[in-house]
Length: 202
Image (cartoon, rainbow, N blue to C red; front, side, top):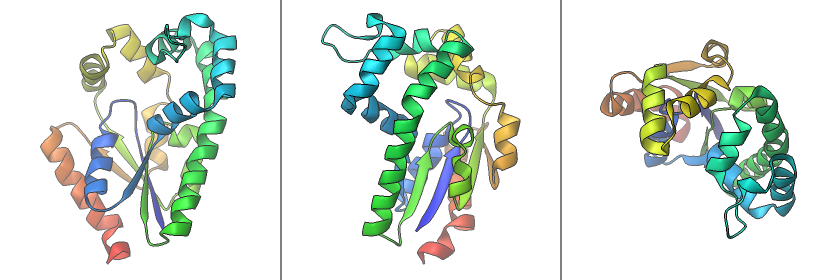
């Protein structure tokens, strides 16, 4: 099994790189998706979130309002740290469980972890390769406003809540620049696949 991490700041384009790898046969694990599953399925996690951030984070039907939680949790370093302490341990446990399960069933698999916080979690030590996707801040703001409906302040809060990109870049085996559009990003992702993965899958 080959384990590759794809990281970078929020809205940098890492998921698009992961899509290219999926098209080539990789099994992609999304940090965002696993985090969502943990919150929805683990009632202990949801109760702790409500206890910490209040009933306002719940929708009328009792499910988590992720946008409202984000507004509150990313308002300060303190509240963001509280959120991370609640969600990250069960998220990482589930992520490792999924990797282990894939390894048992398909030992020849290429597993791709698509997550913004790989370096923050210290997960890069468990990978064969780490890819860092770089994008301009204004481009990331624009994507978050368009795709997530965030205000400029909400977008900046999320971007600046993460480790400086230079820190992540130093941990990476390769840097993919996403500053020339989707078509060029996919071409670059294809080159990276051939560089790091082709010998393994053939």
